[in-house]
Length: 161
Image 1 (cartoon, rainbow, N blue to C red):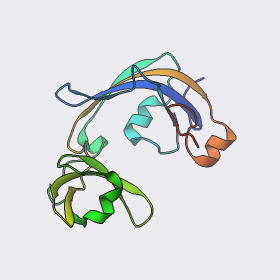
Image 2 (tube, rainbow, N blue to C red; image 1 turned 60 degrees about the vertical axis):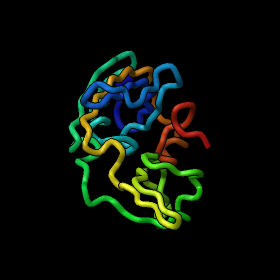
Image 3 (cartoon, rainbow, N blue to C red; image 1 turned 45 degrees about the horizontal axis):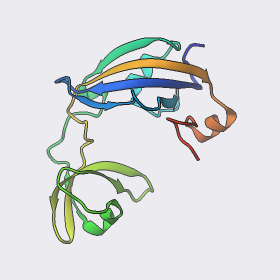
């Protein structure tokens, strides 16, 4: 089966930055799952999966504009410390999830700690980096009705309810 809209793709990956430093890898653990065509990953990366089949391996390099954008110097924001209390003991350089008014969350990096306020960098932690993916497609299958209704893949490496 080829990857197309409403396919569930199981894959292993290794992500490296422009210097070759490994940032993440699923190898040695459970593979990752995603629902193709549901906007659950970077659009350029998802496009690279289109039409491929299980057993295929490929590499792709994403420039910052194709990934998380360039770093913005004006992305530092001061937030009340109480908004991050769910993260436990905080430290400078730590990436935490900042809950948003709309119910979502975004990753931010702590740049300065105060007693009542915390300065955070709203740039995505990978903003400004060229990303090099090494991908091995393990399995491709049709999505279930439940996965289509929920908009994401289910199971180990996907999303469990």
